[in-house]
Length: 141
Image (tube, rainbow, N blue to C red):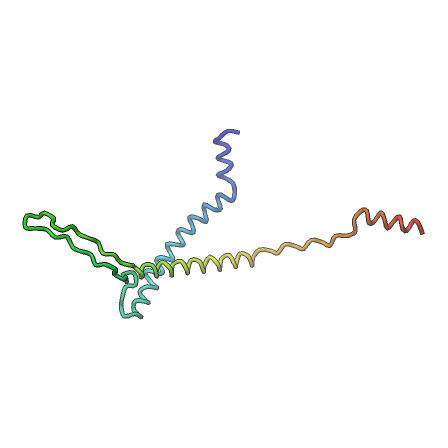
């Protein structure tokens, strides 16, 4: 079998195609959840907390320094960015994750419920040797 036909067989297997579809749908679902959290959930939390934007909340560890230039326009002191812990963005991402994890849990739970339970194996009867032994015992009588 040639390389191309092997690859084609591999790529067209059901599990790979299913996984690709799930990956695309998961990405789209993630965007929907992110939009929900950022555009609907966060503003409500911000309103409750006094009109703040949750994504902008941060703990500044070290203030930034603006660039200083002399009269000729030469940079005397370069700018230094602030060092901050952006806990608001982290909290938003955490809420995002919790919602996605909960929805995935509910989907898996529903799928498991819809699966038909496997029938229990029929109780096994006596083996051929046991039957032959019984016939032998009956013939001896």
